[in-house]
Length: 328
Image (cartoon, rainbow, N blue to C red; front, side):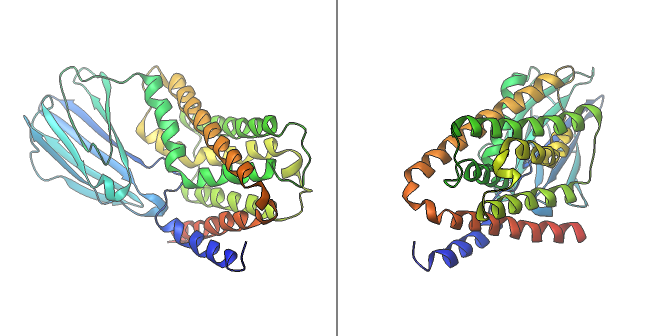
């Protein structure tokens, strides 16, 4: 480890948050409601770090929009509304998903009130054609994938897990069964997620998103500082307990987005279980890779604090960005 390692690490860490995905689920919702005269389309989407995404709604094929869609910005939320002359056969496209880094869940409400989860639009597949018998993907598979995607595209979630891994596998702490301790820690984090998300979705628990996102960034800074300090605190003695406590906060970070997307009527509990199963599997896979990397670099253990510095630097930039968004 050269003398230039620390400044280079910090420079990379400071540049990273500008292009990285944050903790939100990073998707929007396009709700299409059929009526006697056609269909009303409402697209709602929020960007990362309080930035409003630039999205455009198009309808072509057998149907078309009656007039250009209207755009409204409420806080950091973009709302696009339009009306189509019909529904079946309409090719609905959301332009701008690639630049915004978003996925959009398309939900159709039929004239008889039946709800259909038609598709997820994403940068590589920004359009879907509505058919009379639009297939509805299985609830479990759809929401399990959403849980996996949340981890894959949520850099702050990944950094938090990496910091937890550094805590559990700190060479200064003697653990008889470190892998078991790590599994319990990750599961505790998921249980914390599950509790607050379930309360938010099923019981209506709500908190302002801006301070919650700020607390999430601060939790990463806290863990990074703990890794740098002497391993004598509760974080090292009972990492599973601390992980579960922080999981309560992290769960609220994406509860609003999942609530906005909506859970399938009658299958909300199954959807929540599926989401957390997908999230837990993805978390265990990630920490498995992290453990392998730490083992391969075990000779660099005395310098692992630089990784903690990098994690803390990224999270500190997030703190500034989210504090600025909250006060704006």
